[in-house]
Image (cartoon, rainbow, N blue to C red; front, top):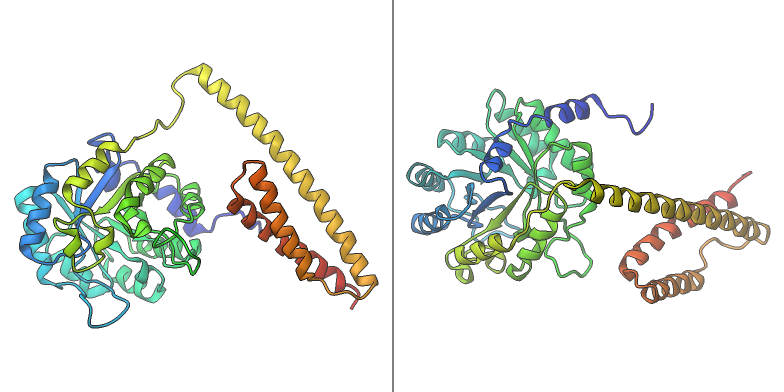
Length: 377
């Protein structure tokens, strides 16, 4: 069977995600712009929740978010106010007319949130990474029609993200959305969680009508980067943003650096540009098609060049085999890595991109040469 074929579950998901009448789609259509979800990282007090919600109700915010159970890395830190926070969210909904959402991490969270009429639930990254926990939540959702948003797992694992969506879908939940909050990395980065944009892009490619919402607060970890991350997501066709908003971010009990004030949120939303999904002029479309054809031709040349390189790799692999020389020549690899990055800079190409590309090329070159050395054994 072809690896490109969808599993039955994926096929069902693809068909179901083509439902244009979903909770998230209808919320967004009202304003003909991105879905806006905002509110504090954590509900800290009833006064803080109401003060934030009152400010957001005056803006183009579709849904109010607040965490009441906070999964923290270490004990003895603020882990949320717990169940009493549901009463505050219920008050926001009743008095201000805002839809409300909170994170759930187990079956009891689900049951209590539903009792208080929470409009949508989200599953956090630390839960998505655990299929047992996701299944527990799915079991609690059996027979319940409540919208659910699923954050990507902590590590860049698309299969795990899709698996969590499948588990919730198989429980009968038809209103699903994905939240991209970035991925943990040991590499130094300006982000708290690196975006790895290609993973949510691949998710969207598989399930085109699945709403994808960016969480720039968790990607950035720094309020100064929130606008740029949000704009990048909208430029890629994301359906909405979830931005942590607090009346006094500097003194927030959790994630103070990545929260913005309601006024700062207003400024961010006013500056965001929503791009058109297609060209609205035949001449522009024709020009774009010409450029696409040129890109196709360039890609053909790139593939031909890679094929030529790999043929040379096989030749040197045979030469090493004949002379009983090991595959990895560390100094040679260092020279390739250094020089190709320099060539990229001279050509005006992002050197980080070329560095990553040559890491992949090197892995394949090593695989081919190792295979040659071990033939006929």
